[in-house]
Length: 252
Image 1 (spheres, rainbow, N blue to C red):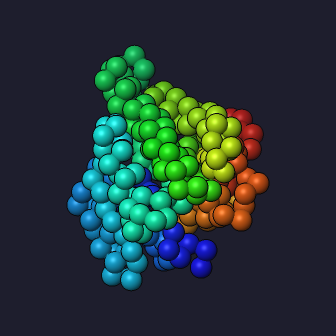
Image 2: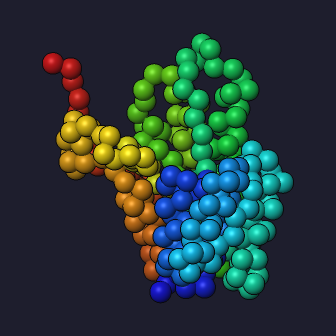
Image 3: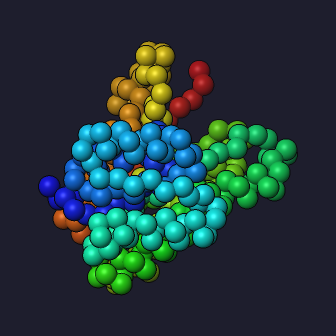
C-alpha cells in the first residue's frame, strides 16, 4: 500500500506502456494523472481505471508546449487535494520519425526532440519545483531507450532524443539530489504493446531472456525506481531489454 493516496503523473499515458503504467499505479492506490495529446484514447484509459475503482484524471497535454506542461503538472499537484503535491513522475511521452537523415526535415527533427527530450525536461523541472515546495522526496523516471546506445538506420532524431534523456537523467539527479528528489531512467528494448500472437518464434529466441518484453516488464522497473524505500538509487539507467544490448552479433 505504499502508493495509497500518493500522486503520480504519467505522460504519454493514453496507450501502450504509458497506459499500463497508469493502470498499475492506480491499482496500487495512487491518484494518477495522465497527460497525453490523444484525447479519445486518454479518456478511454481514464474510464478503464475508474471502472476498476481507481482515482485518475486525464489532461490533454502536448509536451512540445510549455504552457501545456505547466498546466499538466498543476493538475497533478492538485490530484489529491493539493496537500500531497506530486510523489512520482514517469516521463513516457515520445514519438519517432523513421526516415533517411538526408530527407529528414528540420521541422521533423525539432518535433521529435521537443516532444521526447525538451518535453521531459520541462515536465521534470515543473514537477521538481512542486516536490521542492511541498518537501516531497519524490522520484522522476525518464523512459529512454536502448536506441540511446545502438541504432538501426534512419533513426537519428529518435536516437538523439533518447541519448539526451539518459544524459539529462544523471544531470538532474545531481541537481535535484539536495532536495531529496531522485531521477532515474529506464531504457526499454523490444516491448510488444500490440498483438503478441503475431510474434514469430525467432522474435523470442533471439533474446537471451528467451522472449520479447511486455509492458509489465517496464511497470516493474518503474515501481522499483519510484519506490520511496529505494532512496539510494538515483542517476541510473536501467536497461530492460532481455539482454539484447549485451549480445554480440556477427553475420555468418
